[in-house]
Every structure is written in C-alpha cells, then in structure tokens.
Image 1: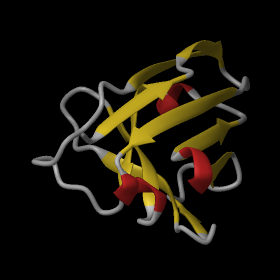
Image 2 (image 1 turned 180 degrees about the horizontal axis):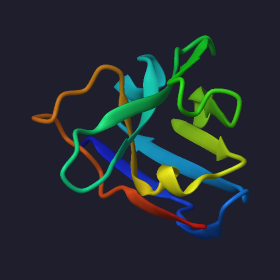
Image 3 (image 1 turned 120 degrees about the horizontal axis):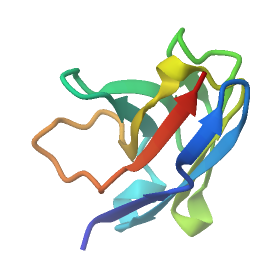
Amino acid sequence: QVQLVESGGGLVQAGGSLRLSCAASGNIFSIVPMGWYRQTPGKQRELVAQITRKGNTNYADSVKGRFTISRDNAKNAVYLQMNSLKPEDTAVYYCNKVPASNYEYWGQGTQITVSS
C-alpha cells in the first residue's frame, strides 16, 4: 500500500531553519526520483526540490542555496533542510515521486509558516 507521511513543519521566524522528513511506503519510492512540493491556497502545487536515486539534485530558483534535499533509500525516506526561511516560503509541503500529477496519491503534507 502506497503511503507518504510528511513531518517536521511548524511556525518559524524569518531567517530560521526547519528540517522536513518524509516516510514513504511502497518499494517504488526507493528507486524513482523524489521531490518536495509546496502549495499555497489558490495556487498550483510547485516542485521546489528533487533528487534522483543516485543523489543528483535540482532546485527551483526560489529556494536554491537555501534548501537541501537528501534521501535514504534503505529507509525509503526523503528530507528537506530549509535554511534562511522567508515569509514567501509559507506553504503546505508535500513529498512525492517526480513527476507526480494531482490525480495521484498525495500525503497530508506538513504546514510551514514563516513569520516576518
């Protein structure tokens, strides 16, 4: 059974840091590219960071240099270290394979709120 559980969100002041974790069940998640997405009300979900099975990474320009994605294939886990957070990073963050459409399974996400 496919399941994605995101955790680590919360309220943080601008300039602060958070580390998100994603626990994935389902063998596919250990071999496909994985990513962190975020969504704010009224906007499309956007991919902010992605990582291949071998560890190659790519970031959206808006988070480059501040966010770091990593994964542990043995644990089916994906992480997102978020530094120098800005109010515009406020969103619900989700992990999933890359690509993933809105019609596929998504976890509940974790809320990040950055206060100015």
